Image (cartoon, rainbow, N blue to C red; front, side, top):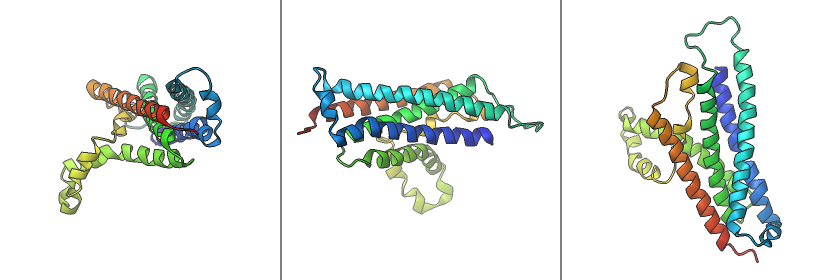
Amino acid sequence: MALDVGLSGIRFSLILFALFWVQELVGREIERRTVLFALTYPVPRGHYMVGRYLGVLGLLALAAAMLGVFLWLVVLNSGGSYVQGFKIASGGPYWLTIVGLWFDAAVVAAFALWIASLSTVPMLPLALGLAFAAGGKSLGAVAEYLAAGAEGDAAIMKLAPIIDAIQWFLPDLSRLDWRAWPMYGVVPDTLALLGGVVMATSYAALLVSLAVITFRRRDFQ
């Protein structure tokens, strides 16, 4: 239970960190017009956005490592003499799960960066980023529920075409949640694991590219 709740807490914390740092490093600079000082240097505008995004990724990696170590220590010292059915894998599977949560937050950060590049409302990246993170996390579970027949509920099954359409635009972030591996010893399929990483990397790259294009065309006069 400590591991399950802790991993959920790490994901929530990393997403909040990602949105806050994008807001402060990009959104606030655009709002305060201090971004104009950076644009006076003879470098492409795209370098500004990519640099900010890479900075956020570095901060997220540091935060994930620190939170991961803290949770690891808590889990190791929370069992006591209790003997559970599944032994916690606190080695490679645990840290790969932390890496998956980092990829999750990286996709959310890329989405927030894109919104910040076009938004004129300061809090819009934060609000839409939270909605994006929640929707991406629940998309897989909803799709599986509908694919299983939704327990025969015809009204809910009418949503199936809508969910199928949404899956073309919204990434399934639940594919980056590998907690069943360290918790229950359920080793994820290698292709599924790599597929989740490729999905996250491709989607983040697409969003950062959109942010760069939008930022290049934005008029700050």
